[in-house]
Length: 292
Image (cartoon, rainbow, N blue to C red):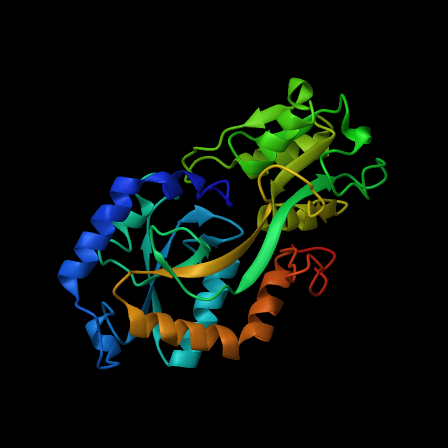
């Protein structure tokens, strides 16, 4: 099930998952020696699978928060960082991690078996974004009657789109495409531009995108995670790192890095405006007012 607008489409490929498993099993048996050189492409380089244009997550200039976390881990490991870039589209996992061009996907939803997941390193949710002073600042559920007849921006096919339909809000909603080529387009950026221009009243976006673009706006926009929905698909998710199924020692190493560096990871995430949530949907830390 999708948790990131630009990553959702790759989550549904059963054939891709099967081919990844077969390729992984044929390349490496279960590693009982603890030798990472058996599992990694190059033990001296942290090889990351990433989108070349998918802010705030990653880009070719290493400006995204996943890039910054990769830099942090590389420093801790005494390695350099290398990238295998591929757009977040069908074939992403197959053509990066599955093709042994890289060793880790820095952001992947927990519970999807197309890759093996590490322990989570953050939790966030879809969020409602509004312009300041428009009366929507405290809305934390799509069932709020103040949203009736409002023009709501939504990425088609994402979990909150189902809740818009349940609450009778689709008739006046403005949909944005789920499947895009991130090298030339961004549904999140287009939605936030429409919100700033008053073309839509509120926007519903995956939390990291909502927080990042809201922080960049002038003036900054209000972001409220949608954590009070009583029915329908869940909107809050744990995010992990994805590795190949056979790479057990590498997963353990990443789990160690996550545990030992959680405060620094949180600081990177909040600097990008990511609304972090604990297990009880309470906010963790505060995002800065604005990011240039």
